[in-house]
Structures are given as C-alpha cells and as structure tokens.
Length: 435
Picture (cartoon, rainbow, N blue to C red):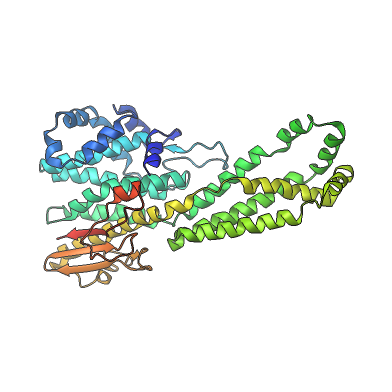
C-alpha cells in the first residue's frame, strides 16, 4: 500500500474540483510535503502546538485551509471532484488528489493543535471539513476507483482524531449532529465498489478498442505481401471489428461482475476463482475455433470465408486473454477495513448522541434506530452480523472484529496504517472505545 500512497500523492491527472483548485493555488505545499506532514501528524497535539515548524505551516497555509473547509461543505452529485467524461476512454484523466491530500493532512494537524490549545470549536470545524471531504469522495462516480482508494487513506488518517473528538463530554451538540450528517452521507453512497468496477470495465473496453481499430490495422495490413494483404482485408472487413469488440465487452462485463461479487462478499477468492473459470472457458472456446493444421490455415487465407472470419475473431480475442487481469481482489479487505471503520464511527456517534439525550447508554445498537441510525450497521468481517457493542458503567465500545476474524472485545485496536502497508498486520479490532 506504500506504493499506492505514493501514486496518490504524486499521481498525474486533473485537479479535483469543487473549490479545491483555489485552495491548492493558495497553498504553499508541494509534492514533497507528504512525508513531513505524515511525520508531524503522528506526533501528539501538545508537541505540535509547541512546534515552530507547525506554526509556520499553519500560518502560511491559513487561506488555503479556509478555502478547503468551504469546499468540503459542498454536496456532491457524483461529479463534484471530477466531471463526468463524455465517454470512457483509455486516455481519460483520473483526478489528481495529491494537492488535496497535503491540505487534508494539514487540516488534521490543525485539529490536533486546536485541541491542544483548548480551542475545541476550531478543531471541530477542521474535523467537519475532513468528514465533508470523505463524503464527497464516497459519492464520486467519475474516477470512482481512485476516489475510493483515497477515501480509505483519508479515513485511516482521520479515524483516531474523529474517535478522540467523541470521547468525554466536550463535543458541542451541533458538532455531533453535523458530523453524523456528513458521515451518514458518506455511508449512503457506499456501493461495495460496484460503480468503480463497472467504470474500470468501460475504461478497459475503450483501451482495447483504441488498440484494435480499423484505421490502425489498415496501416499494418498494407505492409503485408499481396496475397496475405488481400486475404486480411476480406477477413477483417464488414463487421469483423464489431464482433471482436462485442466479445471483449461481454468478457469485461462478466469479469467486472466477478469483482463486484468479491467486494459484496468481502472475499477476494470469489474474484480469483470466477476470473480463472472465465479465462479457462474462453481459452477452450478459442481452442475449439482454432485451425486444425497448416492446410486449414492455407485454406482460410485463400478463401477467407465466414468460418475463417470467425476463427480470426477468436484468434484476436485470445490476445485479450493474454492481458493481465487487474489485481482488484487485493483491494477487497482494505476496502472493508475502511467500510467498517466508517460504520464504527457512525455507531459510536449514535451512542454518544443517545447518551446525551437520555443520560444513559443504550442497551443495544438497535435502540439507536431510527432516531440516530437508519439501521444497525453490519460487520462485514463477522458474517454480516451487527457491529459488536459492549458497555460497562459510563464506558462503551463499538467494534468490528476486523480482518483477522478474531473477537478481541474491542480491547485490541487494529493498526489501520500498518495493515494498509502490510496485510499480514491484521491483528486487532476496528474499534471505538471510550465514554
């Protein structure tokens, strides 16, 4: 995941919109700032509040941070951070969130400094902006894959701060209500990567279509000897390209559904199994339509009839199967860590608001429905059962058992940053614990 984070920070693409370009333009950060900002973000708020470097960064970027806060208030129709492309294409630019991520990190640093200086109201403004950005990323339909990965990264960085903001009795009621609204908006847009997988399939179709088109192939055919050139023109005439692209499109759609099923099941093996089955079936079809020997091949070149065209279609389709399948399955558990982290925060927030209203903790998360939650969130690492909840005195815990599948009672928190770097670091629960 370290490579992914680097791509997100330094990646090329179109700047994310919604007022963020103005924030970036006012910023003094550059592509090298992320390492320093991550190092600072890992420090306690008290240390940050005393740091001359942090004071310098916050002062220099104060206008940019205010523009970021304003941009994060915008509601999204799915095309706020990147406009809807006219049609998917291999060359479609992806949103470049690198500059926004720099300001996002600085926003979280600002929140820690404000809490350390007992300016809770200012810190809450920072965290509401962070939550607003999360909801915009969740809603994004264009560049959905990149947006989902960036959201997971942003949620990982904000989770400790958002959790701390809920502990104790200091949070303003208006902050809790607005934070609930923004996190609910983020949750409402979640579709288990369906939109992202379908968009990726359309981009891959466009990539293949751009690589194999009549104009390009005509130039290559002209380089062939006369008889072969004549045969190729007959074989690849008429609806040849339409037949190839139709077959590739069907294969891509089927493959996309395999990945959708894997995300829905929180099981990467679903994708690998179904994709391999699909590939073997396609290769069997190709083999069944292959020429039976040199004489048959010569016959195809000479007569170039309908059966020869069909064999040519399958021969070209075989090239599609040689292209490496994207490793979307590796994203499945990481997506679900972010998914459960978001819902743990929502449930913990519901408990806090219930506690404020009734002066007692709820007996179960079901008591939060419908006043504070539309429904009890499920734990996708625990067979889709409701998130776990425990209370003792004034203290309570809400948690998912996490990717290791072991119930630690919410007492051992998953190190989400370490897990993002190395999936083997999966011990612990995705938990909120406090009072």
